[in-house]
Structures are given as C-alpha cells and as structure tokens.
Length: 305
Ligand SMILES: NC(=O)c1ccc[n+]([C@@H]2O[C@H](COP(=O)([O-])OP(=O)(O)OC[C@H]3O[C@@H](n4cnc5c(N)ncnc54)[C@H](O)[C@@H]3O)[C@@H](O)[C@H]2O)c1
Image 1 (tube, helix red, strand yellow):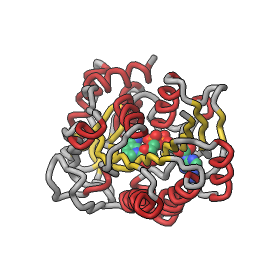
Image 2 (cartoon, helix red, strand yellow):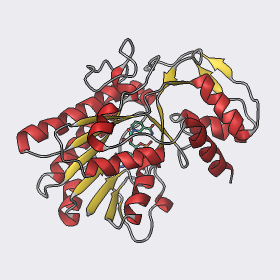
Image 3 (tube, helix red, strand yellow):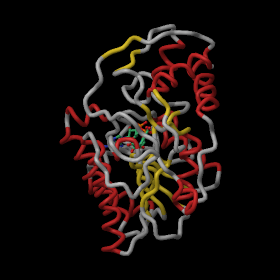
Image 4 (cartoon, protein in one colour):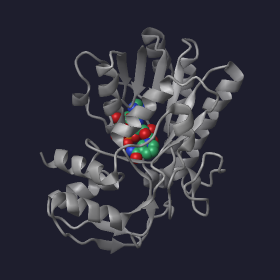
C-alpha cells in the first residue's frame, strides 16, 4: 500500500512509520520538523519537509505520491498553546486538515485523522465516555480537532469518501518529548531520571486515559483497512489514571520515591477522562493490550538506556 504520514517525524507518527515500513508498505512523510526529528526517518522513506498549512505544496506532494491512505498526524498538539494562540491552533488543525482532505481527494486516498479523546468530551460526562457523547471541550485544541473530524465526516457525505477519525487517549511511550509541556509520562520519566522534583498542576487527582503508543499504532493500522460505516473511534483503555498514580508508577519503574511539588491548575484542562473504546473493539477488532505499569517500565528503560 502507498501511504503518506503527516507528522511522521513526531512521537506517534514515527512509531507508525516503523510499523508500516516493517509491514512492507511504501511510506512517505510530510513534516515541517517544528517538533519532529529527521533522524527518525529511515533513508528508504522520502521526507517532504513542508507545512500542512501550505495547500498548494500538500496538493503537489499528494499528486506525486498518489497515496491510498494518508495518516494525518501533523498538528498543533498543545492544549495550553491553543488557549494562548487559538488562531495558530485553528490554522494548523482546521485549515491544515482541510488542506490534507483536498490533497487526498483527487487521488482517492482515505484519510485517517489523529483526533483527541482526552480533550474532546470535557467534564460532567459519563465515564468511560462513548463516542455518542456530545463533545463539551474545554480548550480551542479540542474544538479544532472536532472541527477536523467534522470535515472528514462531511467529505464522506459530500464526496463519498471513507475517512475515519481516531480519538486518542493520552498516548505515551518511548520518543515522547520529556522536555515538552505535553506528555506527563515523558516529563515525569525525564525529571525522575535526572533526580529532579516533578510538578503536579492542581490536586493530582485529575484522571486521564493513558494508552501505550504501540497500541495506538495498531489502531491506525486497523483503521486503514476498515470497511464499515463508523467514522469516529475512541482509542483508549477505558480506565482513568490519576496524575498521583502515574507518579507512583514512574517512581516504581525507576526504583525511586521522589515526591511532587504542587502548583495551581492550568486553564483549558478538564478534571476526568476515560474513553469507552467498545466501538473500536467491535468494529476494528482493537483493544489496548499494554498495561500502564508495563508501558511506563518500557518508557523509563528506553529513556535511561
Ligand atoms: N500524544 C498524545 O497523547 C495525543 C493524544 C491525542 C491526539 N494526539 C494527536 O496525535 C498526533 C501526533 O501527536 P504526537 O504526540 O506524536 O505529536 P508530535 O509533536 O510528536 O508530532 C507532531 C508532528 O507534526 C509535525 N508538525 C507540526 N505542525 C506541522 C505543520 N504545520 N506542518 C507539518 N508538520 C507539522 C511536527 O514536526 C511533529 O513531527 C497529533 O495530531 C495530536 O494532536 C496525540
């Protein structure tokens, strides 16, 4: 299969790239390297260094590569940054996604969008939350991802395409940026490995659905082959883990007992998250198989290797 991965030099995209190459697919990558790492792209894979906000450049690459599937992962990924600069978030995640859809259309490619489960539903909703729950997002990032999903669904109605969106839980695993502001597992692992004190924003009882990156990659692969009628899938474990529990798991993996300092809660955040992924189980044959303890152990080991 011929595929393009946008954001293929990033955390999740590069793991997806590795799997697709091993599985024998012809892969190329679109990435502006704003946070991605060129070293993650093997020599056999073509890297198109461009910005998804550039519609003409995206269309030109799509026409040249003629992919059957575009895995669309390039995005503005920070909840906090989306609050600070909603215009940039919108340009990248809404207009950028539209550019991908328009690039994919003439060549008949299916688009699989990396959307968000965590930032989608907001508070005061059933836990674990099913896809049928109307989103009540707390941040521009959730809105821009929802808008991207809606464009995919619209194109399915308007143009008869079969695009799908994956609402990912909080993905974690090796290669996630320990110096970034997102990815609390990576941040805690990085700080604890350096003997530093992690900061917990809020009371630490807030929960998220943490899903291991290898499981997320399997979900993308399953979505590419999907033949049914659903358009949106939650991709999570169904279980919320608190930030305090997470720190304990990282301490256990590291053999340390480092306590956190506490700071005020940040805006744009929500209190609890857990995704009901029974639709993905029924339709894609997908379930998360890596426990949080095993995933954190592997992540810590690779960071400190
Ligand atoms: N990591 C998570 O927990 C999580 C959860 C839900 C959804 N997602 C979504 O999954 C996708 C991948 O996330 P990630 O954690 O791997 O992020 P990442 O930052 O590691 O990867 C994003 C990649 O996209 C590239 N990129 C960013 N803006 C671009 C642009 N305008 N044009 C071209 N390339 C651009 C970056 O250089 C980077 O390589 C994103 O769409 C994100 O919103 C991630």
